[in-house]
Image 1 (cartoon, helix red, strand yellow):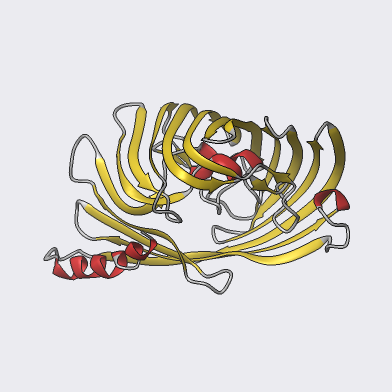
Image 2 (cartoon, helix red, strand yellow):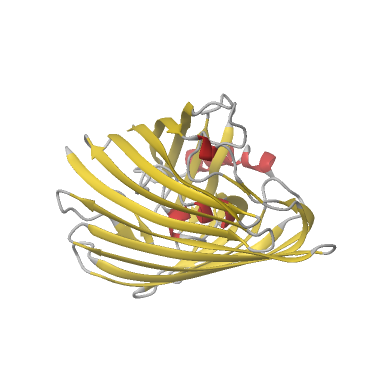
Length: 358
């Protein structure tokens, strides 16, 4: 299915060239680059001989968005951070119906408040452990979505881009009360049911420090069926954002039986300017500000029940928004993890990011 994405962009260009509207196509090109540096203690390593720091081009994204007509939209995005051409988004969207929009192609599955927040807009440098480990990301599929009144709904059929055997249905429902200044209260939930037909599944997650080792290692499962559920809460008022999410996953292995994973996070942010983040269709956006400081913190936990492994992190951060394009982020993380009844930590890590959008 990955190869199918390679043909989406040329097809969109042909479609754009065929339209007769004088104002179309409306094409915009953009992207962003993130450069990260991490330093951490031996707690974050499997082998103490490994390096205690790392510097990476975390993401280097290029994207093209096209408004092809009053009803048609498209997006094509790639990442070239590791010297490879990795397609992220490649879809076309029809918005001509009153009750629903249709999106076809490679796209984010509608699951997880933190996962659906762009990596350029997250409070902290890395998303929480449970979001990275359990929330599905981008897949090839078709999705319907709508926003009647105070509600938004999404449902889609997706195939895992890395496997021909894995497919499933994912849906999300949110409700919000929001005023014209983007003060709001938000409630949401998502479900995903997947058939994996024996595909390998394994938890392999760091303690929210990208350059460190993956210490949360689960059993290698030959997954037959997989179900995921989440609940999400969020509130914003005069710049203060409070956000929480809990995710649970059950995986059935024909030989080993059922495995259960669960976790969640609670995080807050406050820009000293008091400006609100943008909120639209059940998703949180960024702050439009210059020379603004944003204070952030998060507590998260993740549990691998059958493996008797747990982890907890506490992080505080500060973001400096030079302008809408240039942002610097710094996080101090304290983490501990438990394996076979033995607890390791708490101990510290520090992460820094320079982020430029264009």
